[in-house]
Amino acid sequence: MLTAAEWAEARLGYVFRDPALLDAALTHRSASKRNYERLEFLGDSVLNFTTAELLYGAYPEADEGDLSRYRATLVSGNSLAAVAAALGLGDQLRLGSGELKTGGFRRGSILADALEALFGAVFLDGGIAAAREVIAKLFAGRLGQLPGAQELKDPKTRLQEHLQARGLPLPVYALEEVSGEPHDQRFVASCEVAALDARGRGEGSSRRRAEQEAAQQVLERMAADEVTAHD
Ligand code: MN
Image (cartoon, rainbow, N blue to C red; front, side, top):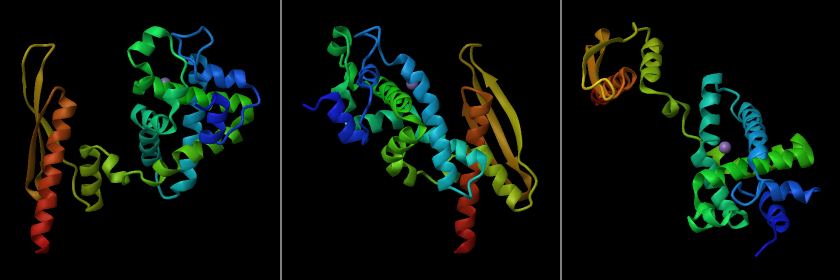
């Protein structure tokens, strides 16, 4: 098996000057007081800053809403856990015996946190340029595969933008029904676009969710109408 230093060089493309930083980044709190938690705190910021910069350069046409949705996708727990798993980070983690037995090295949240800590450690060891290089290398594939900006927007936002682009008035949302116990309520909302004679109805555990579903229905009807109109 690779030593931690060999692993970092092979997988991150980075050689640590201070191996203690690398060791701390790979140590869970169940194993030692000198663990990755403080580095994770720092690395979270380094990752946010660096992905903002990478996205700013890669998507000159994207507005700030798209850029922040892209970043949220890149730095989500799932995304980080997948990057960490692909690096084989779990094999390098130092865990206490309890975490070892319960398979902590495979747990996504631990992998994601340790990856953030590694970015913090690279930053302390080699500065922001070194951290940027490592992050750019690890996220290059994901950066190129981001879903279209439209897919990341919620239905209400998409519907509003769609109508505005056609010069149509905004949809009207109404709360139709609230039922259930106070701690377990169900909401029914409607969304109406009078200009297009389109109406949707949605249900959910909050008013917002119900409205989003209603807007989604209207979008689907509009898409279906457009297909028919082009036939
Ligand atoms: Mn974290």
